[in-house]
Image (cartoon, rainbow, N blue to C red; front, side, top):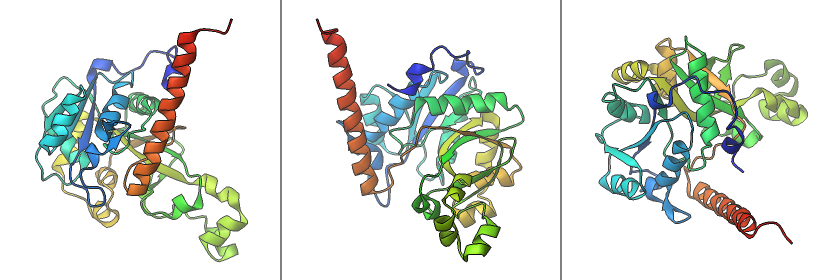
Amino acid sequence: MDRTELSVDRERFKAPRARVCAIIPARYHSTRLPGKPLLEIAGRPMIAHVAARAARARNVGRVIVATDDVRVCDAVVAAGFEAVMTRADHCSGSDRIAEVAAKLDDVALIVNVQGDEPLISPLTIEQTVEALCEDEAASVATCCERIATADDLFDPNVVKVVVNERGRALYFSRAPVPLPRDSVRRHGSLVAALEAEPHLLTIFRKHVGLYVYRREFLLEFARRPPSPLELLEALEQLRALEMGAQIAVVEVDSSAIGVDTPDDLVRVRALVAADDASRACVETVQSDGPPT
């Protein structure tokens, strides 16, 4: 059972549902996976899975896919969701969603849901929206999860985040941060330190690429050019930090799996197939009723 189904009775959300819009940027061209939004997963294009997950977040009132390609637009509409065509020259997903957000005068919060995460948890979206509502001084909210393996820690495609005691982001990096200096000194390298002291892995957090913006900040963010640190690490969230924005970070339990490579696609297809089989089994048992 999805954890969202278990949270129905918790306190009412602070964000009025009608004032929250999830926008999913979906660029057709991808170097490693051409036509990525339309890749088939369990009989539906990947982007349809993402839209369906976002729509299940109970504090999101509207879901829009923002794309630069008519094929993606047509597939989204055929799947029963809303799509908007945008310019093709945007440098980042946040810049693309800002084009759409500029026309949404009645919306207060914009959720940027990555178009290549078909397994994003609706509960993760709900928690991140609430984190921004609860932190009035923050302009952005995002989320993180524990790093489980040394491979993820050293993988530059897995972004790490450092958070202060108030739950605000201090820095994002593709490098393993923060560095446990004394342990590295004792053992000669971070690799050796982790082998000798496995508990060190618990200090690291993986950034999950889900953002919730206050609409006014998002529009200002999109007007700014890429910042020096953003260009250096190729991480757009560093632009927000260099602008002086406060970013609230909530730690979540549900693991996010992005589709960046053919191997990722194989893994996600297997997970979706297993989930569908499990749901079908539960539905069969429920329809048959208890044994007599």
